[in-house]
Picture 1 (cartoon, rainbow, N blue to C red):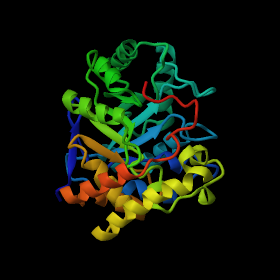
Picture 2 (picture 1 turned 45 degrees about the horizontal axis):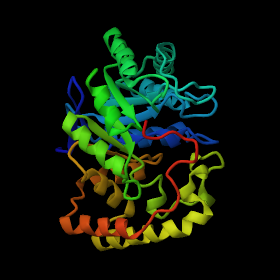
Picture 3 (picture 1 turned 180 degrees about the vertical axis):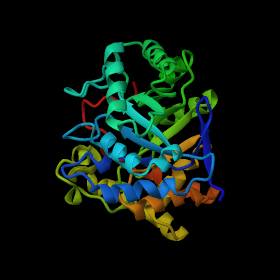
Picture 4 (picture 1 turned 30 degrees about the vertical axis):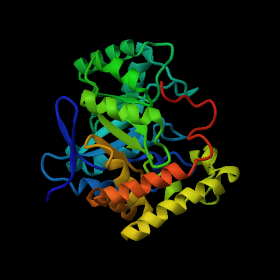
Length: 335
């Protein structure tokens, strides 16, 4: 069966156009049960044809007790289903000090992070791509990439990624070693000037863009509010979800709903398809803990938006000023 795919990295890897973010399977007070999480992970892996993979996105710190809960979940999954290991392209964010969650790109901490990730996976799945979750302002990006390139030579992983970086930082990094992917937030309500610059630079440099939160952390679906979130859900702290911003931002959701209703699709599919339309090198990365929702997300790759559809979304973006920044104060972005 033929699927929309994106080719990334060196050596080249062909992944499905839509990836799968796993964070909220474990970064919550009560993690999703294994059987439910496993079913959701299998949905995408069951879609691939020979030579294709699904980009699975995890993090060294996507859990509370232990912080490596997300990676350990993956370790259990691939231990139970070893035949799926070659169908997955595993990207993992790390590089933070786990006690303070501050960026630390010293060679010592980067090695600790990579080795901790590999240990948590239990030998059941190789680490395909490693990326620092944020840029350490104390360490030149050239030094960080040099350290990671050395780890590739050691065989610890195969590809280097970047996260929450500016176009200028991406260009500097790419001069040191090929960058397979850059992970940034992209959605109809997160399409800043720097976002557009990164997408353009990535295209020029032959880097894939892994576009996380294409549905605005679920807000743009119209189904997620603070009232129905787990008490430890990180979205409780996002300014755009708060009462003073909610009503204003809900008007933008209503504008998107008018487009999706006309097209006969959900807001989720509209957002994923819109993000995917930003370039052949752009991989929307929705997250889902339910098999049915994951299947809907992957099927959004088949939605083809016309120029009229795209212009209607763009008009909605121009007409609605989003209230609140995408992260709480103090969280570093655009390093």
